[in-house]
Image (cartoon, rainbow, N blue to C red):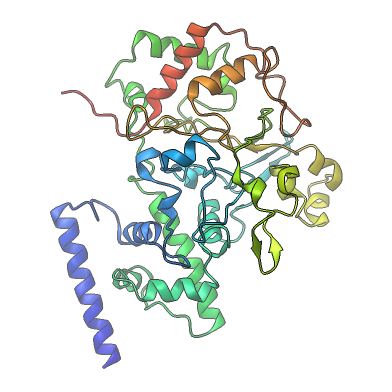
Length: 412
């Protein structure tokens, strides 16, 4: 009876999937079964309690980052499924995250490259894909989706209305009877979410700038000037690559490196209050207001000494030289928002609330009265801080960055 029921569910699933594709519904469009399953996992509230999905912090309408105006205006860090608990950084964009290379050390450049999360700790070494590694983290993080175990995640998927897709994608029902089953299928959750994040629905390459590169639209005079400044005296393209790849690949607007911009603390970051919130009797943030975000250096400090000796590096020196560095984010969708006045937050801690403010900070950090950097070590003084841009030039760079939002509609 159980086998007959499973076969029936599979057949019904195939019928539903076929109807969705045939009708061109919002559910499927042209997503593959694996991408569609990943989409269900991404939007399902797989948490404890059942209140939080991946999309809660990575929503399409804002370029797959934080979608709540009130949070973006202030602390910029999103609460977890247990609403009193907060993490320490604003959500990075999940769009184009699958295109990040495996975390590695570039011996020629002397720089760490790749991975996901702001500090690169989703290295891709586990599943061969940083985005897949990243997708596994929030489910079990007590300040995010707070599931008690990998099995609890699988049990929720097994009871879902889309579970029929699991057998279509993986060729067998979802199982969690043994520890080997649990490990195998939990990894499959990450791989499947990464399939969706790698789909055309997330990585659209459909901005005005993409169409400009294809010769289908012209930039305005101000946008054209902004592009020239972006690639020129603004020095933006040194890290945010704007040129197509060697085989015509669309530019990703990041080189996947890490940098300390001299970003000030965000005084509204709720993580500073997490010394008052306990998990298993221990404060989430024992340092309270004295906590410092060491970024990449903090992650590197957790790695074994052998990792560094294998690269010919000294661990203590390497960790120190990467204090305060965070991932260079893609600028794709940097201004994507559901309405003109919708607030967004920028940089790893969300301290800035407009692109205008970010560009002005880059331009004048070292010559105007900005708050001090959170981490004074390793601040980049070569590529920002005193660029000498006029207000009009700053505005032109912002205008150009606004052409990077997906969903641009070509006029007939």
